[in-house]
Amino acid sequence: MKAFMDKDFLLSTETAKKLYHDYAEQMPILDYHCHINPQEIAEDRKFENITQVWLGGDHYKWRQMRSNGVDEYYITGGASDREKFQKWAETLEMAIGNPLYHWSHLELQRYFGYTGHLCGDTAEEVWNLCNEKLQQDDMTVRNIIRRSNVKLICTTDDPVDDLKWHKMIAEDDSFDVQVLPAWRPDKAMNVEKPEYSDYIRTLSEVSGIEVKSFAALKEALLKRMDFFASMGCSVSDHALEYVMYVPASEEKVEEIFSKGLSGESISREEEMMFKTAFMQFVGKAYHEKNWVMQIHYGCKRDNNKLMYDRLGPDTGYDCINNYAPSAQTADFLNSLIATDELPKTILYSLNPNDNEAIGTMIGCFQGTEAAGKIQQGSAWWFNDHKQGMTAQMTSLANLGLLGNFIGMLTDSRSFLSYTRHEYFRRIMCELIGGWVENGEYPEDYKVLEKIVCGISYNNAVKYFGFDL
Image (cartoon, rainbow, N blue to C red; front, side):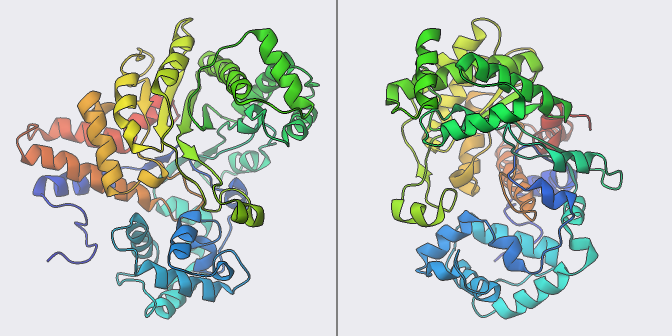
């Protein structure tokens, strides 16, 4: 029997162990998509206790606590941090086979030196150990990033953001990790939302352009893109229900925008028409600026109305949406490449059944601007577990070039989540090592090193064009 999560965790063959320990483990981290707060980096926050780090905004953990019958009082309610931690520990011991079990224990091992297992009975011991460690100077936010060997971070930022925290970090010579903004214009696109006119009013104020038409909206967004670019931004991100393609005339798009601005009801077809025009506009702008376009889709959000009314969005009530017409995704990409204005693009679907559709689609639109110009993104959210990662990489290997894959990201709000890169790299080395051991790929370590180090870090550096 193997020891619990030892140095060869998830590595079952000698080749896998060599690939991980000699190559993948040594590579730095490029976290090109996450949701961490740049203010906490700028201010070099020090956390008071492990609950603040682990449970402050982690809807992954909240979902599992609810599945364990825990009252909301101990999840997002007024219970003490110690009480919340106890309930999480009691939940974790039931999470056999869940990636949260592995993530949590990787974090306990790497940042707190704890090699036991967290459960209800050990909660007090772990609580005291972690809180004592968190008071040390090497456990501030910046030092956690440094000790994780992170070289660059892309946050997720709205076009109206003033990016003052990014500016503060960039001007601070004592911190040498790049923290760059990433452009997330969802609120400018969501014309069907009741708060749309309020957002457009804010965008008008920030951009200095009175936005009363779709044409003016495009002008305002281009101006904000220029500002983001001046702050080092070269990456965008979009959260779509699916990648739609419902083309409409300029006159029709203007009509839909006018209705949204005045608070009139928008039909489903009109919503898709407007969002198609919006995505075509930004896609062409990204191509002009040599930005990367990331598209995350396949999620049905805010399913529990009772809890949404209590807690709002991003609180653990989302699920996989199985409606994502690949024909429309292909038509959208085709509409951009038709005029040679398709940017580097990364497609992430929350539905693992879309792996093969994406794998075949990206092969239709590749270019010479980058190896793997159109990428299938890493297994995302509900899929970033051992089976999901293995399935995504196997599909990509079957249908494309796995060696050009840009690898893992945290997609997290926690500064301890960099161990997700370790988790991914172990799974990747196990997969590739198994192919070598089975005689499906030669034991050529010069090439294997290139592939493993590329997927771990080097491919992403080249793909995004970061100065590292």
